[in-house]
Amino acid sequence: MTAEEHTGIKQLAKEGALDWSTKDGPYGALIVKFRAEAKEHYYRQQRRRCCYCSVEFQDHKLTYDAEHILDKADYKEYMFEPANLAAACKHCNGSKSNRSISATGERFATLSTTSGDYLIVHPHLDEWDHHLKFDEIGRIVPQAGSLKGRETSRICEFAALNATRLADEFAITRDGAAETALRTFHEVNDVARKRELLALLTDMAAHFDHAGSRAVIGALQSEIDEEGSLLAAGTAVLAADSNSADHADI
Ligand SMILES: [Zn+2]
Image (cartoon, rainbow, N blue to C red; front, side, top):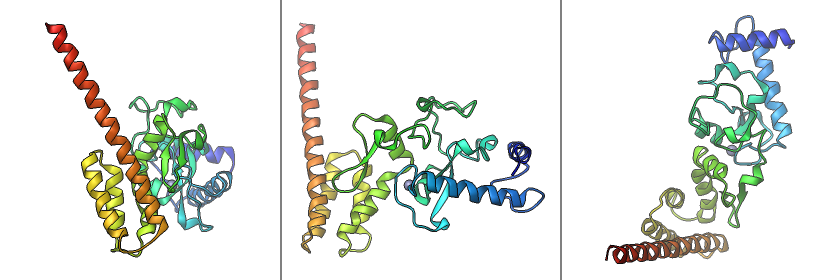
């Protein structure tokens, strides 16, 4: 499309006169072409991987989406802006939807090119592996200390992706039960609840002998142990604080 056509489409989108899925009318054919080209461009540029979870796309356009980094419901003016587009898997695109990704919580006044203005890993402004990584049992986890990693995980609901992935190691057990337990395990903060879920998973895995499920259980167990000892240390510090406060009162 020509620069004038592109400007025209952006303006009409801003006014709400046309949409991302417009197929008819004077601009329908151009929009269809733009969408296909944008998807293809980012599919290749991102080396066929989702910009958020890094899953490898299958070579079929129905398996991934053109992603609007600033969502197209709230930012119609950037709906057809290439710098606001990327390629994402269905899971990440659907989970992120139109959740706010503004670091300040305020609406973006411009299409910012400053990484720090975005709560999550920005497909074009950040390096994915500075913020996220795959751990030893194949989960996507935040890099230590990365707030963007944690926020991307929350907004794109990686707990669900991780649960599905880990549940493969429990595939021969009860349908869906392992996946549900694994997802809850990653969503709750209560260590006691995590212990119950791990006991359930251990029980499931006891019915078959599989190195993959043993590795998952082992890794989750050491996480709980670590959290448990951190909590114990925290309680000890609090107790020591209150003791010293008591002494101060005297
Ligand atoms: Zn994804």
